[in-house]
Image (cartoon, rainbow, N blue to C red; front, side, top):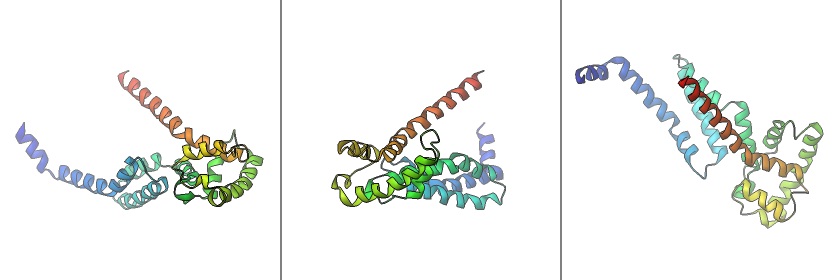
Length: 196
């Protein structure tokens, strides 16, 4: 048995696959570390996803399409828009990641809550909202995340003034839970299917 394993280890195919895996792990290392941090910055993580996709794109020429397709499936356009929209709402570092276009794009994915007139109203609300929270009221200066932002809006009773912004913050807070629930359901279905 040991002789067979030694023979396999010396084979060209094993060495090639090992080298390929090393290259893939090197390309995705920074992304993996960013995604595992508790205090991760979504914008930076999404930039690292884009970088990894570009680096793996060069592997596409050597018929490694499946790697790129898998990454695109995990971080497709909708997922990217949702994550960047959530990050744009974040109050961290005095709203440094604020991006109105990304927040507006996020709202378009919630068709039941944001029709065309509410999208237009949200656009106006965002202009006054960002000015107020970043320049007028110090209650928003040291917030750490969307949860803190939500509580601060309620505490000073501004969740009624900017009801649509507050709704988007609440939807962003429950989005990770909803995604995890769906992923768990699909994972359970996969186990059941395999057992059958």
